[in-house]
Length: 84
Image (cartoon, rainbow, N blue to C red; front, side, top):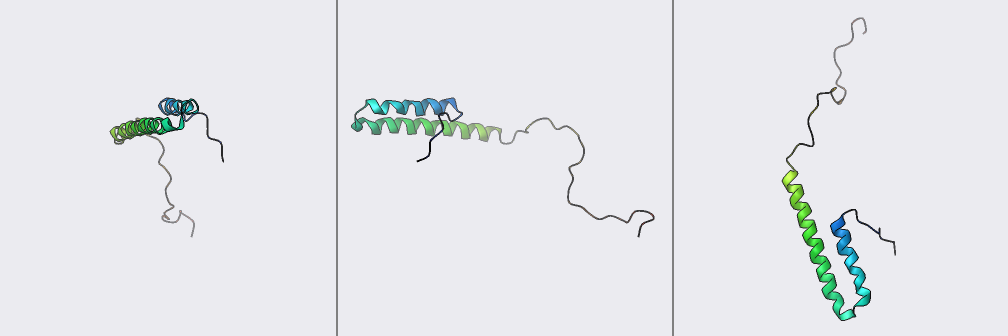
């Protein structure tokens, strides 16, 4: 079995996962309630992230700054003067 990272990078998720540590102190009969609570919390967090992404999907990433053109596929042009 592979080891899981200690942190997810999201404080909300980390707090929910940390709550699973209490499973060792509880009788097995109470584990389902703890897992249900964690699942509900993770589901709510994911919904909040999805909502945030949907709200910002049409926003530009940042100001457009004019710069050099991005190279595209090579399109042959007329031959250079003096060259066949």
